[in-house]
Length: 258
Image (cartoon, rainbow, N blue to C red; front, side, top):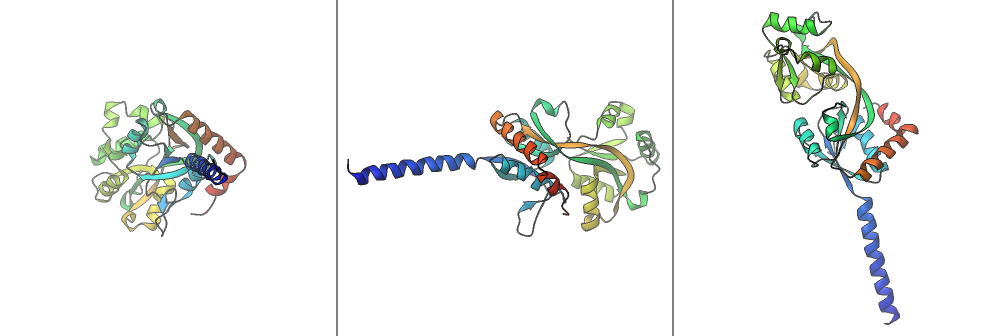
């Protein structure tokens, strides 16, 4: 075999090795996204960004992966996580039921769930869940709860009481809550305080709504990692999160003005 053939074979094997290494290093993590500024939104170039996305993106890249974004509804995303069709989802409350099919990374941030009502209902006198129920009965209307969302243990426990649960109506999405509240079909709904405040300020669709002073729940939220994702990938993501949390990188992202 001539020197040129040996050199050619060596070069070919080296190229195959490099391609293999690059393929491994660019393994993707599929991440659920949605339009919910300032945590998740698309910039003028159509690129996904926001405080939540940039936080998790930094973790994914530090772990040696590339993020792949999937814009899917909330409930569908949870089902995809359970069946291994999605790797990661942000902004999740840690619950016993979800822990059956999810590993957890975080907390990513603290989240407050506030009541959202029309401006003409801003003066509802509400200090606790009993007040919510009394107002619903007095007006013969309900408050909206989004299917698959978690609003805290206190509300979850009370919803097991049939009479109390009749004060609420289950909706499929934030958009449905918006429409029903704006049209006066329901009295209001609960939503992430930071996100809904941003929408009320910047989105004309929300101009009829206000944040009520009643806070339903305040708790940390996490990234959920599908248990169908490889244990090695989860371990790398966890290690990357710990590193970036300790060196202050994630706090810099969180504290940025979006």
